[in-house]
Image (spheres, rainbow, N blue to C red):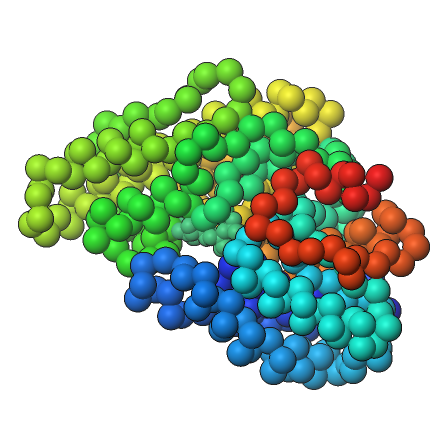
Length: 348
Ligand code: ATP
Ligand code: FE
């Protein structure tokens, strides 16, 4: 029977219904717009907004799928990591539905959902995607290399020691006077600029391991912009800075992915996920890493890279398959931090 999933870990309220084979029967995302004017996500506003839209959103998604609650086999929700208010709202709502209908509730780790998205039949293709594979998760809140060895078997190979990649994009966008979220704006501006115009540092580039660091890069951008003071930055300079910064991040990603790949020699694919995976310069750089190893390169479509409920439903389906009997996670509490490595304990 189909699985309904709820995602509320940040500022998107999402709901989806998937058939057991991964077919998306219906899906909707409501993105909160109030945060743009505030320059970032305000947790309390986000949690209240999730609460406002969830009931109607869920009804609408079930309607789109032509289903009622009694047709479902399970209900899932992200229970972490993320903003605790939103996680509590979404998972409590989902638990309530499950309890009322006597359905199993499946608690999904949001990062795990990102990690398993590439195995959705519509993304992996007819042959599917087998384990192990290397995942680069690059979003506003996360930046890490993960060896995905099986459902519940994740090894964090490295990650950022300061900012996440998306965070760096957002901060540089702010310095350039662009709006929030910054990633898409920086990419658009970079198209008009010369990626070699500004000499910027590439922290940790070529160093052993696969950790990331972006704060030195961000500081360098800020220093280079100092001479312009409070005056408006000429468009040409802004575009060159955007292009140079983006090229720098793409180089760093490729180098770190290359190092991570050596740690998963039996992998056959490099998968990229998270909002920053929307960036075409970064995609291109990572595609190069994959092709140099004869690996597949998989980048889920943008709507599946950013926060969505399809991935949450899919992760629940993967868990149902891996765990066999119907699990019931009604007692699993929402948690702001939930390292991927801890999923293992829950499923073993
Ligand atoms: P998380 O999923 O880790 O909790 P999040 O909700 O912020 O965090 P996403 O929605 O996956 O993450 O991604 C948003 C981030 O992606 C933002 O920082 C945004 O600037 C960045 N981003 C989006 N599009 C692009 C792009 N084209 N180029 C670079 N960065 C981008
Ligand atoms: Fe996310």
